[in-house]
Length: 234
Image (cartoon, rainbow, N blue to C red; front, side):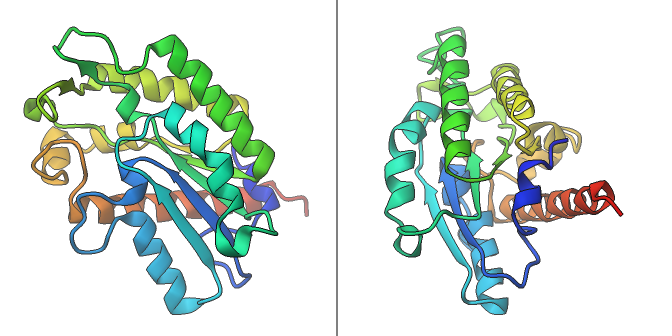
């Protein structure tokens, strides 16, 4: 069951116990594009501060990071986060992979990260993360292909996004890491809905997009918590 790792940690979004959480990844963790609330991780931090100021949440998202770059910095940054220096966090949130997927230079060019290399990197990242603490993974949002190329040279597209998120989803499933498939969830709402929830670059969510993502994550966590209660022996 995909809730295996969360059974050893409190429910993330409604808990009276003090939690220590780190969030690693790219701009989706960093919150780029949200001029009102600073992204979904920041919304969670603010919500926690209003109810339990002792919760600790470190946003360690870096714009443009690939899986390999998160791999390179994760353990060092994990060990140097204030209150966490002498404690293991209760949970690590990961969200990375979209920056590995684009075609570089032209629509039929090579991917930023070769798919075989990506699979090796994501496996290494997940194994390393699980050795540190329980993990959950928030998937990538689908892009607006009509706005490509991004920065004049990167062609993000749904076909490659699908392949890379499926590789990540499989690696998570094999390790009992909960994975929220944001790509499929948002595609189910239609491309017009997606486009209205992205900023002008067609890649990053706008404030409404991050709010929608935050609500998706809250609902997902509620489902996980319900599954935990159902799975516990009477």
